[in-house]
Length: 175
Image (cartoon, rainbow, N blue to C red; front, side):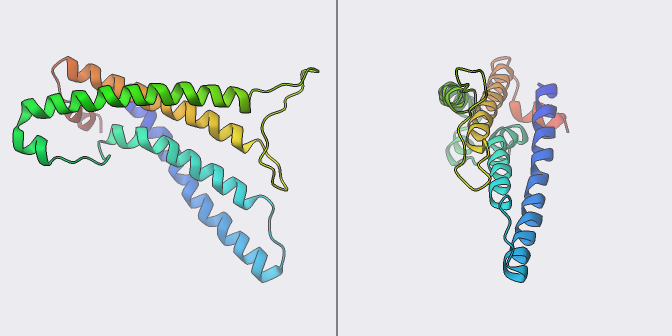
């Protein structure tokens, strides 16, 4: 669990630098466009991919960090037994959802990113912009990878819960 938590935190920290890069690119874009009448053809597309990556992997990061949104009104009022049942139900439903999402995203990314012409050349789905990158396929594959990683985190936390320990204590002790 600690290895998985460390991996997710490392990915989150790396991707969080993407927001700083986005600020830099957008600042450059505004100056180039309005100051020199020379807009870029790449800033919008790269910033979109960077933001998508950070947001997609952010769910697993928040789960590991235990900073995702929770409504504790009932679980706090009804005690530790209800809290454990509530946590188990949440993890089970999350696993079902993320399993379906990972499956669908893999199917989408196969059709979008892993396309080849009869001559063997790579023909991914393109963005349709002036740069015309393979960004849509890359984002769809990132959705698959993020959903699969999030699913692993949920399954690991479910395993910890089934062993009678609190995922909160395990995650907190790994800092």
